Amino acid sequence: MDLLSPLLPVSRETFIHFHGEHSPHQHPGSGAITPQHIRSLQQLLKGKERVDIQLQCQQPATGKTKRAVEGQWMLCGDQKSRLELCSKSMFSLVPSPGGPNAGTGVGIYTRLIESLMCGSIPVVVGVGVLPFDEVIDWSRAGLIVPSGRYSDILYILRSVSSGDIQNFRLKGRHLWYTYFSSPLRVVQIAVAIVRSRTLHPPPPAPHFVGKQLLYLPAPHHKQITSPCFTNNFTAYSWSFWNDIPGPLFSYPSSPFNPGLHFSRLNEVAIAHSASQSAKGRAAIESTFKKNFLVNVPPEQFTVVIITYKRNEALMEGLAHLKGIPSLNKVVIVWNNEDDPSADLKWPDIGIPIVVVRGKGNSLNNKFLPYKEIETEAVLQLDDDVLMAPEEIEFGFRQVYMLGVMTGVFRVCMALAVY
Image (tube, rainbow, N blue to C red; front, side, top):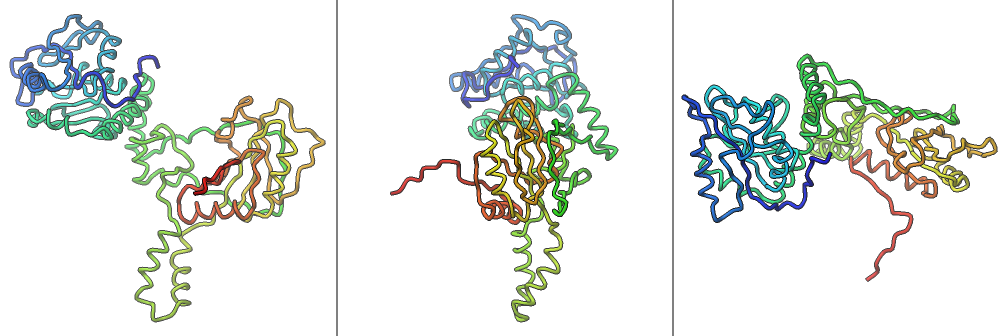
């Protein structure tokens, strides 16, 4: 969107920003942030930091945001002008009226959402209720300052490091896109919250259904499909509310899933068998296999190959995949305009081969979630990449046993020799 501001560089023209006009209240309450508080902050920052604070609107806000409830802060200008000023500031002040209106009003929520849009860290002072705070961890996207600590706000802001500022901005941009980017998205999130209260998981994310051009079965090959949707009803799924990919869909698997790996089981096994060392190595290995290996289900992986008018290289690469024990199937993303020729001689590798067509001729087609992929582990190759079966199997075992990402050398790599 044109209204979104870049998140870099970290430093900006203004240190803190606030434009607003206060609507007096007869009983502001002990937690209210009044013009006197804002002026005191302005005096503290004067001559030390670059500030942009105005307590009277030169151009009143238009529409619904023009009207302010007693004790609240009225917005100034239109959205475009506010975002332009906010995008130049590192921090944006979001004060609360306190009293019976604490944490309510269009002005508070508008300032909060606009600060997320322009990458200015919201400094929420005295607000008791924030949008969707039932599921959103707002402390990861901004600073929540109790009204009683208002006098220390300058010290708090100066203590924020550049790394924390960048993390706040990234998380704030994610929250804006996931929760507040459109009225439809707000409604979807409200429905998702109601669904979570009743312990109903979100609908599964849609697969990409490409046109299947060819299927070469392997009747004697035993395929193992990875378990799917294993975290729909666990506490782990709660993290999706504040992290990628978000709460609107459930996914078959996730790279953030804290699964069981042999490395972790091995540590537990060593500690468990320390007291049984007198029984000998054979007894220790037997205990490990009996109590720990059974917790790790067998897994396989899928090879995805993208190809474009290099049939000979493709056939040679397929031939190199023969004899890989953990290979589930090979999915070939066919970027050619024409369908595979009937004259092509496909190698017999003992593994099912599926040829699908993606969205036009694009290298990004290999990243689409094809419904033919039934394993969590995926190895993506170009049609001119040749790897030994032992090398591929070793890489998969590293992922499966240690739970770490594994890569291989590029097609051409120059190693400096000193």
